[in-house]
Length: 355
Ligand SMILES: Cc1ncc(COP(=O)(O)O)c(C=O)c1O
Image 1: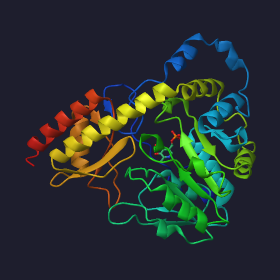
Image 2: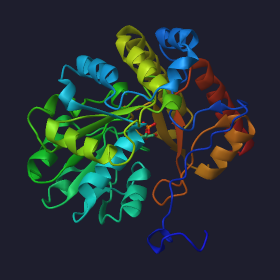
Image 3: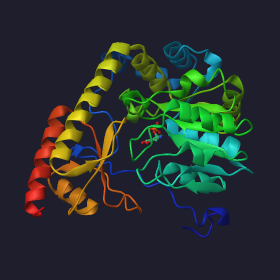
Image 4: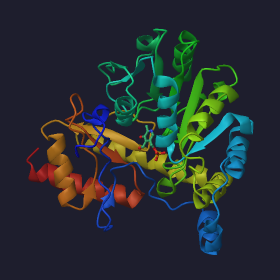
């Protein structure tokens, strides 16, 4: 830290992203990216686009992309906002609604919520998940605070039924409820269908997981026009060209290809079931996941040791040095062959560790 940093940020604890090795040596099952390439039209566009288009700024309203998103979800363009990854969309939402009102969220969830609260000086109410690592809607019925939940929840993969999301929405007529649906396409139920009924609902999704575009950085929000206007106020006060030209074009192509999207999601869902069962047969406890990852632990094998032993064998998973989940590792669902390799390595580790 330099002596110039504003005192307000002296204690800020930034987000620590999962490892991103640049050498491609690992089977990468640590940051919930897709193991599949983007839709074929994305590659075609990328190779046929004249670099000269980058001379010009992107469309500040990302109109083509917003139209495609609106079309996919059956909503109006006035219900859509796009950002530079859903991290940016979430950051804008925290900025827009956080001042002067606490933000409630679970103790075990996406780590960025706490970081945004620190960055924007927002009070938090951190609510423990129940003993089964589930979000209890009844813990979020207190009006006078905004709420952010990941559904399915990050780290655990567990989903909250839509009726429970609706209970939270109804309890907060004068607060904003952010439903972060980064993993919804792998078996969750989206709250997008509820935006017409609740003016306090902000649904946030991403192109990073189910649409194979983590590196393009595109996220979106769906809501009534009032909330979308708020996000635009923040965006146009910060970076009007927040989604770059190439990413806008590629994301629009990705969302047009509905068959490829469905096919990739189906493969992940099938391999998730296969991997969960195989891990259970090896004595693991595996939380029921509707995301593209599994949170698993094995008695007699510390989470950190398992993570390290997999890494030594060229497989990266994620271990969180956090209370309550220290025993677990989170394994992103890769291709079927990657899962087979991971399971073979796990058998070897269990044998080597004598468990
Ligand atoms: C729950 C959740 N929300 C949001 C994000 C951010 O995704 P992105 O910024 O790539 O859209 C992630 C990333 O892993 C996540 O797990």
